[in-house]
Every structure is written in structure tokens, then in C-alpha cells.
Image 1 (cartoon, chains in turn red, blue, brown, yellow):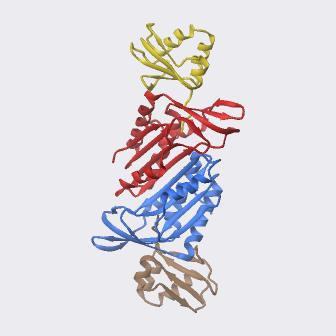
Image 2 (cartoon, each protein chain N blue to C red):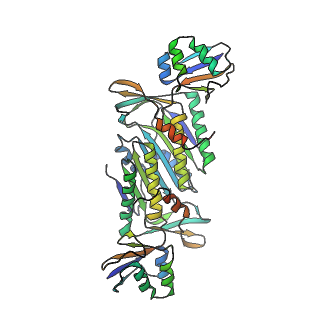
Image 3 (cartoon, rainbow over the protein chains, first blue to last red):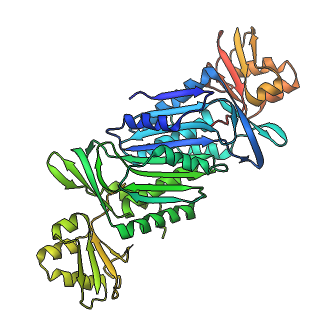
Length: 154
Length: 154
Length: 81
Length: 81
């Protein structure tokens, strides 16, 4: 029951990831997945696509740390986190988080905790292509609030 | 962007359901899915499989009502709820809930709300095959607590 | 006529999935009393605090009114999902 | 030698993704002051309240100590996911 944490330019296959979670789930019973997609509109701008930059040496370290924190707080089975980088088009998949647990609440909380921390701690930066040219996405204050809700956890 | 609510004896294809959610998600960005599987152990008993009975005339009415309540509380895109009935084997998929939203928190909350209410309001009953013979599953008090957390909503 | 249904463990204990009642009962409490005439087992099963009732596919209580032609279902706490 | 990296909007504003510093600086605050010698733009970018710093791939602050051979990265709030 090995976790999968990956940063990649290629698209991911949600079905294959779901099957990987399910395969290791004999004692789990609950699977929660989150997928983030490139939206057509963001902060009032029509989005053509986006470029995702990251800090390679830190990214895996950051994601591994977030997954480890989730494991300390809940009883979780298998965890998969995939984040894409590079050029993405409208509708493309950006991120996948999948969590299994024997308990429904743990699976939901674990997946949401990972996303809330990924959004505020993992070193990714989005640059959107809009009708007014490229622009760096600004951090959403709600993301910081969502993370703060979980309390301190280092 | 039509919701899908179904009760069926056949297995469901998580991938097809995910693609149906994704297809209608140009303005959504967030997809949360929950899948429930037949576990190998429950309440201390090794489970060989289970039989799911339901109250056909009430089931769709109940699920539609729960989905409607979720829509009133959050801004949700497409919603899919599939619940199986009849004979299921260990590891089989029992239930799927999928929700899209423009906001990550709404997608997580909507999916969890639907599961918490389905677990306490929708007329399904599980009978497990154990090493001591068949036994009706007893309701888990934690499910009632999980539902109560959302407050009144009728 | 009232159409009465039983599900889950209750159906097995009472060895009855469905029955029709012609008696004039005005609410669920009166229906339970009428069904209790069938024996101690029926009284115990229907008076259990955890036993739920639905009138025309909507959850109700002992006080819920019953009209001719209604469908009334008794069942244990649900355990799907 | 300290390896200094810049990401996102900061990298574009400073037109610099990476540079090496040989100066003896003991903490992030001292490193910012040293980099500020490069001009007003550098001072503004690095002093911004929202600018984050990571020392050897771990988030730190102005008070974080820096040792020879460390990798120090400056970047705006993250926006992945």
C-alpha cells in the first residue's frame, strides 16, 4: 500500500488512479478523490490556458510533508497526489488527490486537508493566458482561511 | 447539466461517471467523488458479501430530496448519485457520489453532506454474510452524529 | 384501505413484507395499536424506539395522520452507503 | 557561497531566476539587505509582506539563519492546485 506522489507535465488517467486506490482497499471501504481542472473563467477573466511553474527541488518535499501530516491526523489507507506543471489548456486536469480509509469522514477530511495545504504551501505558480495577455494568478485569501481552519500542524 | 440519480443492481463505471462530471465542468474547476466499497471486515466480523435491500417507492424520492437540499446550501454544478442494491461481493462498489463546483470547499461539503444524509435517511438495509451466518448490519451512531453536524435542513 | 409495508430485519421478524388494513385508523399510533392485536412480537417490534415509519414515502412519527389509501412503511434505522 | 533562486512573478520582475552570493550573510534579513544593494526594485520586491522565503526547500522567515552552501528561494504566495 505505497503512496504515490508525483509532479509531471503529462496528463493523468483518473481511472487508473482510482483503480490503484481501489486495489489496495480491502479493509478501507471509503475512497474520496478530488480533481482540479483549468476553468474557463477566473477572477473575472476568460481563460485560454495556463502555464504552471514550480520549484522542483522543493515540490516533492512539500507534497510529501503534507501527506505525512494528513497521516498523523487521520487513519488513512492509500494516498495519491499528482500535480501537473507546464502548459495546460482549458478543461485540462491540473491536480488529483485520492485517499482511502475505513471511515468516510477520515477519507473526506484527509483529502480536503491535503488540498487546503497544497493550495497554500506547495510551490506552484499559475500564469493564465487571458484576453488581456498573460497574468500571474493572485493567491485567493479564502485558501489561507481554509488552511487555517485545520489549526497548527507542524 | 442534468443530475444523475439512480438505484441499480448492476455495477457502475467510476470512469464513465467521472467523465460525465468533467464534461459539464467548463466553469466548475473542482470535482469531488466518493465511492463506498464492500469491506472485508465490519463490526468485528469477516464479511463474505452482502445483500442490499431497499424500499423502491421511497428510495428515489429520498435521494432526490437529499440532492435538492445540497443544492440549496451550496453552489454546485453537476451531481451524480448511484446506489446499488441486491447481492454484492467483497470489494464491490456500493455507492458513488460525485459533485462539481467552482469552489473546492463547496464540492467537498456537497459530496460529504449527500453521503451523511444518504447514510441516515435513504431507505437501504445491508445484510452481511459472515462466518456466523447472515446478519443485518446495525446502524452506526457516528452516522447520526455526522448528519446532525449539518444542522436542520428540511 | 391502508397499505402497510415492512423492510429489513422487521420484515423477517414479523415474517410479513406487506399487508392491507381496512380498519379506520387516524394516525400512526392508532395503526400500531391495531397491528399490536396480532401478538406480543408485533407490539415489541413496532414500539421499538429505533423503529422508523414513513407515510407515503416520507418519514413521519406516531402523530402523523393516516388517510384511506395511504402507504405506511415500518423499518429499522437505514444502513446503506 | 549561497545559491539564491526566484520564482513566479518575482523572477520576471527581477529578470533573474538564479544567482550566487559570496557575501557572509547570517540570516535571511541580511541576505535581503545585501540583495537590496542592486536597486530600488530589488528592495521593493524582497521587502513585500507577501514575499515568501524557503531555506533549503523549507519555508522560513527573515530570522532564519543561513549557512554557506545553503539554497535560499524567494517567491510570491503559491497558487497551484
